[in-house]
Length: 86
Image 1 (cartoon, rainbow, N blue to C red):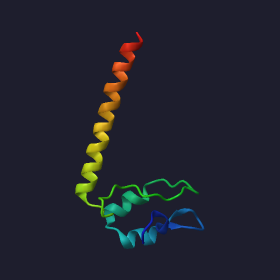
Image 2 (spheres, rainbow, N blue to C red):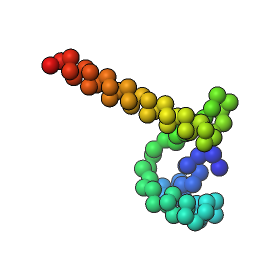
Image 3 (cartoon, rainbow, N blue to C red):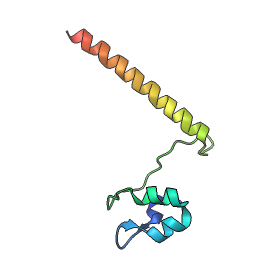
C-alpha cells in the first residue's frame, strides 16, 4: 500500500473500513475513518522527505521550521508594505 486511494473502496468512494482497521491500530483507524472523503480527488505526496527521498521525523521537523520562517517573512513583509502605502 503506497497511496491513500488504496484504502478507499473504488465502487462506493468511501473508506474500505475493514482494510483500514486491519492495517492500522484501533485509535489511528478511528481517526482515519473520521476523515471525510472528496470523490475524484487526486492523490499527492503530502510529506517532505530528505535529499535521499526518505521521510523521517527530522525531515518533517525541518519542513515545519521552513514553513514557519516563510510565514514570519510574509507577516513582516505585509506589515512593512502596508505602512509604506499610508
